[in-house]
Image 1: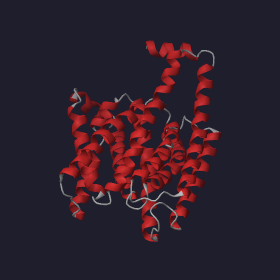
Image 2: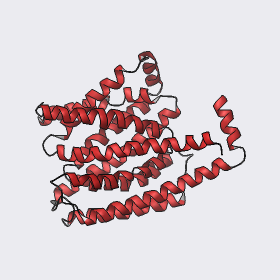
Image 3: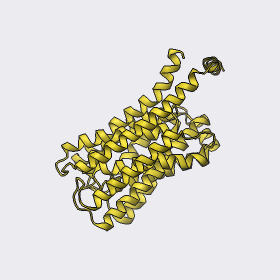
Image 4: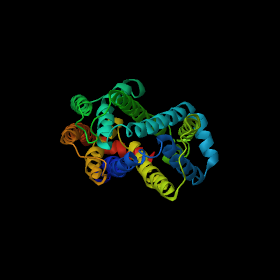
Length: 325
């Protein structure tokens, strides 16, 4: 296999990993922020800035209009998936510590991605080791939920009602995150560029969070500290990190993206030490490590299969022909 081919195979996962580093730090920051500001207030303001940036920095608005018209159903579903994902995860942070919430979300991710794959990408099959890894993650996730219900997480005792609410938010986040992955892949396959996706991705999220703000009357104060925090989330946690993720997704199989999200967990657990309201839990660490190891297994299985296919005779010739086309 040529060096250019190896670099192309590595580019997607590396971009996703870059997103994971930023997202892990952002999760802890948001977990502390939602204790004082409503999730919808944070999301609305952060994504208004991000949407404006991506739309106004896109040069060809006419081409954007044409590609949206051509791929409208998938663009709408990407918008809906994005809205549910970001709103639900912020509400999950009001109940669970960031490492716990991300573990439940990511633990369910590969299983949901595999199930959705039968419908959305029937030509791509999960490998046996990926199925085993997904099963291991579900077991570890169940262990974490049990520890939270018994008061052994970093937050301490969680009332049953809040626990159920938090789990529902995590499940919604997982399903919508898998939807984001697949619809991004489908739009990329249909010829929509990453910048075009980002310029049209957050409309439903902005409208939905504004409606929630009005209905709940949950507007926060635009103080210097709040504005600074929201800008940090928007510029680094949304604009930069999501661009890395979008670029990574269009270059990587969806199941591999789901597996790589496991690096979020270890980093998030470490960053949580700077949050004084959290008392680190050993049980959470065990769950985080179990899910991360299972994800490594699944990622390795997909990488091995990809390398084996690339090394088969004729693969480099095919790649060169595709590059010239």
